[in-house]
Image (cartoon, rainbow over all chains, first blue to last red):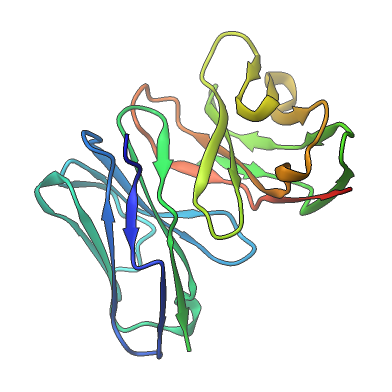
Length: 111
Length: 115
């Protein structure tokens, strides 16, 4: 089966600009996650969707980050405006039950 | 809230030598436990998981892990390391809710394999 698809793979932006990441989960997976992985750290959950509803966004910096999941399938994560500390790899994952499958991630560099 | 500690930031082993990566967790009940591997520029790949039952869990690529409730540990082992095992390894814990649940990751252990 096809895995979790993410795009773009790399993105370089200047601070205060906006950026968006896209994720297409494994077909049939109801749960979708966005994680932020800062260099040298483990991934940290930003937001969890169940179908197209938000289950947990307690770690999402809502003043600058937003996410949506249209029709319970694809998802986009947006940052506006970006800060230097947002430089990280953004990982999307999906699951049907208790095992999460991860995409390759988008590496964001904010300069 | 659950948490994970991976005490070793960086480990170097010789090819063919045995490996043990340490993981300690904090959670009020029996959690779901996972080990993931991440190669450079790649996403996370699941090596193995523990939900319940036999405390010794077998995974892919010859890895195994043992859940020890008394020590709140879930250490990863491999009897003979291959050069291709060089990567970053993450231990993770999830709440035992019976359904998909968010993962809390440790900070990772970078494994270097010398030939």
